[in-house]
Amino acid sequence: MIDTLSTSLLAIGLLFGMLIFFEVGRRIGKARLVRHPEGLAKGGGAVEAGIYGLLGLLIAFTFSGGASRFEARRQLVTEEANAIGTGYLRINLLPAAAQPALRQLFREYLDSRLEMYQKLPDIEAAKAELAHSTKLQGDIWTSAIAACRDSGSQAAHMLFLPALNQMIDITTTRLVATQNHPPLVIYLMLIALCLIGSLLAGYDMSESKDRSWFHMVVFAAMLSLAVYVIVDLEYPRLGLIRIDAADQTLIELRKSLE
Image 1: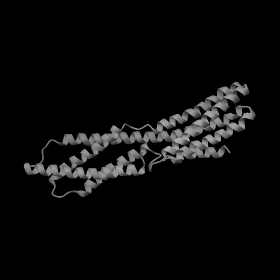
Image 2: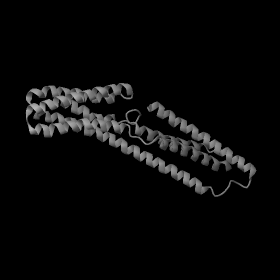
Image 3: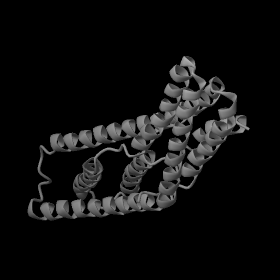
Image 4: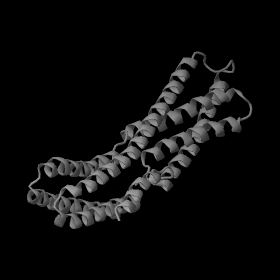
């Protein structure tokens, strides 16, 4: 499971991995200089430019995609709040006798939706609460169908049921959004390019007598931090970068339903 600890371990592992590859590249360069004292082979600049260019492009691609998905997930919270609020207001179209029970079901449903996301990163507890929310959806739908039938009002059928359907559909949309991530191969390629970039940089530094620890550590630290942020953006309920503040819209809605 992806969480703050696992993401941090990934970044730290990448940091030390890059430092190791710096040293490996440096030793390869030193070994070549022993065999060819005239210097390192020329013409590798184009290869290095291609590798670093691809690394930069992949970082930009994954960061941009992660930020877009992060914003989309926040927007879906607002859309769900609007859908629940609209459905709650349209209960007024139903017979007066059916309204109190449906309003109570709506309140319980909203409580369950909030509780599900508050239980993360406990995945099993969140799944159990999701099952409870799904059951409440069925109860609301069954009660709504019966109330619309009893009302004999065309407006109730045409306005309340579509709003209720949208409220239910948004839960599936949000669930799919939480599972929408780039393929694992993208992250593996990103990590591989970071390591290869370190190897090439270490090779180029081999002509210097002393290691430039400052450049090595800064390069490795910044790329590791970039990978950390990219991964954390993809799991905004499990890491340090979170969308919990967006839930305030649902919390405010719940207060208004009293």
